[in-house]
Length: 237
Image 1 (spheres, rainbow, N blue to C red):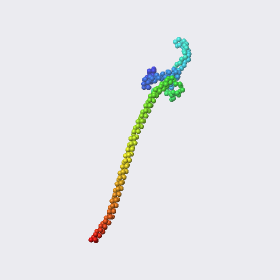
Image 2 (tube, helix red, strand yellow):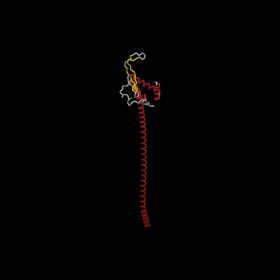
Image 3 (tube, rainbow, N blue to C red):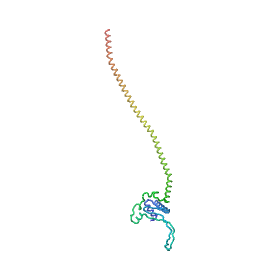
Image 4 (cartoon, rainbow, N blue to C red):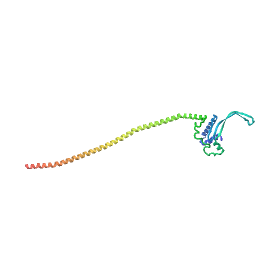
């Protein structure tokens, strides 16, 4: 499998060739830069990439058999992890789906907890993330300010609407109370008029009865007086 085939295989899992190519390039570049800087790149279940120093030594030229002095040099070395060895040897079966290597232990991917110095690539990545965050900060601030202004405007609008509704509600309440008071007063006035009329009628009836009784008492007296007067006139004649 070459790099292009590796990108295609990764693209099947990520869903895009461009993203897969960028991911593969980023991983390889980070690993190479870390090893060149003398750091060790260890992937749990897969293996370890590290830089090894080879001291000066003598070797033989395979064509002539002559001894040749080899200078001190540095070479990269890869040591496969136990999980990788077990899968290659056949002692463990390769899963049909999912990751073939064991996942990293919990907390091992958190920076600052492993005790290993940060690699230059990691430093560059952190710097890039910081720059991106710094660039995004003004936009986020503007967005927050705009959201705050919108919220303030909405609150002011709600307050103004409530302020407008309050006098109307108060006026409606006052009008209803006034109508209720007027209705009550009208009822009381009608009741008072009715009571006054009834009292006057009763008083008039009582007066009429009293006048009738007086008239009845006075009538016989007048008749007797008339009889006496008539008798006197007759005697005189």
